Amino acid sequence: MTAPFVTFEGIEGSGKTTQILRLSGYLAGKGISHRVTREPGGTPLADEIRSLLLSQREEFVFPETELLLYEAARAQHVRSVILPSLSSGQAVLCDRFYDATSAYQGFSRNIDAARIDWLNDLASGGVSPDLTLLLDVPPADGFARIRGRGTRPDRIESESVEFHGKVREGYLRLLERHPGRIVRIDGTLPADDVFRRVRETVSARLGW
Ligand SMILES: Nc1ncnc2c1ncn2[C@@H]1O[C@H](COP(=O)(O)OP(=O)(O)OP(=O)(O)O)[C@@H](O)[C@H]1O
Ligand SMILES: [Mg+2]
Image 1 (spheres, rainbow, N blue to C red):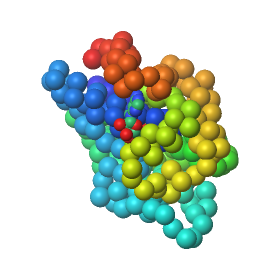
Image 2: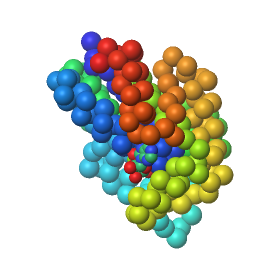
Image 3: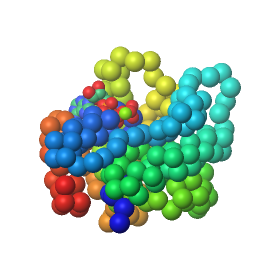
């Protein structure tokens, strides 16, 4: 039996990194073996692809180019990190996974959903999250938080509020499509309240 695979999703600034780190601390306290990773990235090659994707550039990046780079990074990450961890009994907490591709490149950039599903399946080698926590916030809230972070916005963060609104809508569609796997958590609540819900959900779903 393989260990649980949990993914965190949501628009920029929705609190994914904050919550994944809190869950990791909580699991460590309980002695539950796990690994924290993120997409795009998670291996040296996939991290290089991440820089290609997120750096600001003069050249226009076509949606299909972006899609294939995300999937290339995922193919490497799944095979070198996620699958080996899960098969050795170590749970994996991943900051974004293939739902992000469906929401960003599918819903927001308008690439056909069936093609995305096919590529997601190829890249993920059949690995599917046992549980996906969707931190739901309106784009204006996410933007305000990112501005508060004081770092220069990356290429995706620099997209319009409309773009991020479509991403959020895409995530909510995915929630309708996979109600058994994806759990929506109100990400506008204070971080402690969000974390209480994260804990309740992983306890109910995974016995953690
Ligand atoms: N529930 C919350 N309420 C208010 N602020 C929050 C909350 N959760 C996180 N923050 C703050 O908002 C900012 C964004 O949070 P975080 O980096 O966790 O989001 P993220 O979803 O990982 O963003 P990105 O997609 O850019 O990686 C941080 O400065 C964080 O401290
Ligand atoms: Mg983050």
